[in-house]
Length: 199
Image (cartoon, rainbow, N blue to C red; front, top):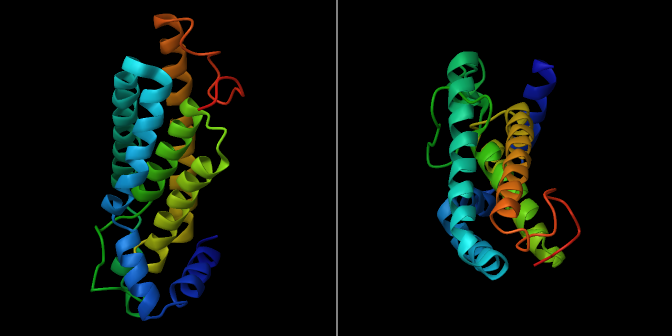
């Protein structure tokens, strides 16, 4: 498994040029996705009214859970990032000499972004396909940027994304159950992927 993981890393990481160096360097920075966050906030206010404050709190808690879970596992597993692995670091393409922290399993970027994508799409349940697509494309591009920059193995990304999605789904379930109890007319049901009451 480790050999396959490393081989896929080499293949993807070596698909590079100056344009993609610049593109993925900025794509890995969360601030450029601010318009997407603001759009989600607008949908949240439109659907939940004052309860959007609870949505904001849960979004923050979701991020904290995904981020800190990754930090705990990284310190427990201690898997060196490709850029810090003395056996292969010289073979890794980097951008602006960025090498990240020492350990990389699982990817916090993948965990955070997929966690937020699943949580927000789960609670907002948009009928506008482009809204859902935008969040998952955002998560996929940002996650892939970590491989392109050489700071994660593909398995780091896959495990981080899966863990984030699970946390995001769980937080969506809890959020909708709480909002139903606060005001039964506020939501159509407690399951985050119900087809009722779309944005």
